Image 1 (cartoon, helix red, strand yellow):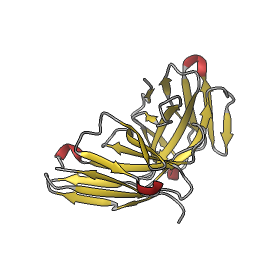
Image 2: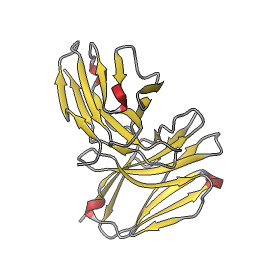
Image 3: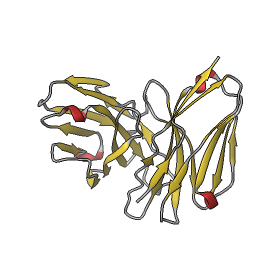
Image 4: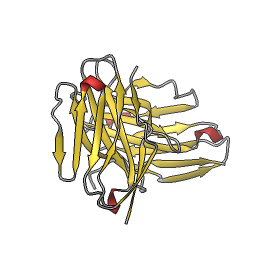
Length: 116
Length: 115
């Protein structure tokens, strides 16, 4: 079975601060995929990034960066110079193949509030 | 609009009534998923279709729940004899088949309130 843990329930920062959202996953599969989604108050889940288990390269996209470490089963997400528009719930998710139909297993989410 | 569309956005129903939700996936996407999200939790998988075939159902999907995807296009999720515990956001997602490397696109969800 797959499991995703987001230990931080809520984080509050002041605009322009950097913030890191933690994600720890569990799976016995050697091939798996990790995702981050953003859920603003409107409710729609917005895809941010996908990594596969064979690619441990970190990635940077504008103010967003992701640190994937298989040794610690972590896939952390950092927002640099946070903005009020970053306020949302962020979900880390995991999928595997081989009969699991690539369905997503989500963490409980981290509510990020960026204050002006 | 080429995204995933769900209807209705909100539904309030009395306990014991039946409700039906609709999801229109992105047109070329062959995979369709239903998830349920309760307050303060992440979405939980309910069921999966590949084209018109329902290939997996979660244990969360009691016999009061049924889903269809006729002709492999839109999908419906019906809940019979609703209970207060069914109150949640029901999310639909679609993706283009291949492997897990293709991301799922989500609709805005249907928020169900059972009173």
